[in-house]
Length: 539
Image (cartoon, rainbow, N blue to C red; front, side):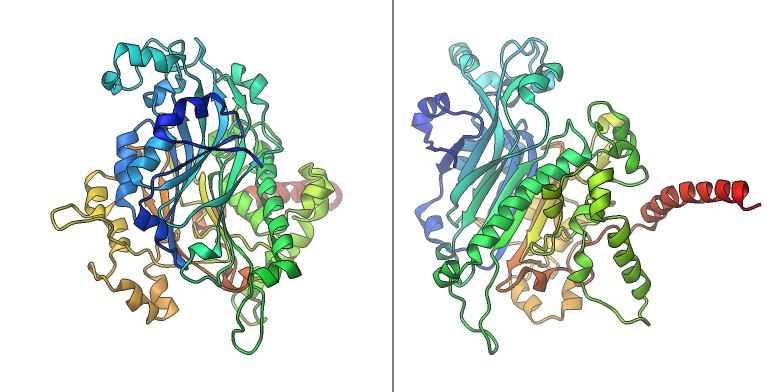
């Protein structure tokens, strides 16, 4: 387990001086009242890549307006020129009055060939990325330039206490010690995953098992298959937790009261939030920097996010999803999915086509974890790089849930006086959300009893109040960061993860355009080969 450094504003210097890649920083700015507040089984989770914290004030304004219980954030800087030499984790936790665990992935090295957008110190560029340095005196600026520069990810909590912070190093990616200089981003360190736990004593219902929250940022300068291996690093950790908590000792430690007429064991809940960098599709697949493996050819006609859902997250899940009778309109697709797993997604395919070993293939099995992301993998867009005019866009940000049920989003007012603007109004005015998105947050015209009303509605009626992707997308105009953020309202389930897994599986896409194009790219080569074989041997 990595060493946790308890940071305070007055002790930043010695704590940062000893910080190393893979190390943890911890700050807690919650009020005494917030620390005593218990987290219910319903909670709001935010996933957001904040782009180093460059637009810090806009980020704080947006996050203050969102009623989130847990924040999962990527790309936080400490003492970097591009983000005005801020200690972004500490200042963010202080501004939001939250508890934070920050994992240092990299110590950024200053160099003359660093481009402006990656500037970390005086050597990087003679130009100023931001003009917000006026609050530093020349002496203060000189002192900050001499300090070390860090970059990493964080998990924040508004009330429930985060415990057991743990760092999981990735086993696959690129060697930044060597490749960083070639990419003009010299740095020491490695990609890793931050895991925190919320224990039952921090919940309103103490019968709820542990809730584990993961924060990850997968490597962008590698291929699709390397990112799958990075996801498997998390799968290994989650499976080890299930094994430990499924023991007799664990059941005695967290007893579950009998429901219905029998006892049962409730699985812990998991949330994986992160920037998966699933972008190796479209023109990106032909880039020597971003598409570095065989998938640049094997996945033609399909987005990487769709491929990840189809090949990894949905593998063997037909044994979990609801079956159907032979007369159902779903029966043909059900049979096709069975044949697909047996033939096209088998052990032999993963071993000889994708190059995975037996140990890795064993973990490409979602049946125990039942992880799912509610979004449409083709239509949900969380990054749209303006420099490429729509050619580099897609779903890069994910919220994978296990033993959690998605609820319709409801806005909870916090610290809003009569004379203060409501959070939704602030988000609309700064362009962070659209009017349509705001209507999901207040579906019943600002009725404070929305949650009670929804409890009395049928499941079909409630589903109409849930956005297409399950979550609310904010930062719509990409003004606070180059990524959109995700706000998701969920409820932890007391039971088994398979009970709340989508009945017919997690969605691939509802777009007939994307689906039709994908099928054509697979059917045309087969038809061409068949035609040549028939012409050669059939006549």
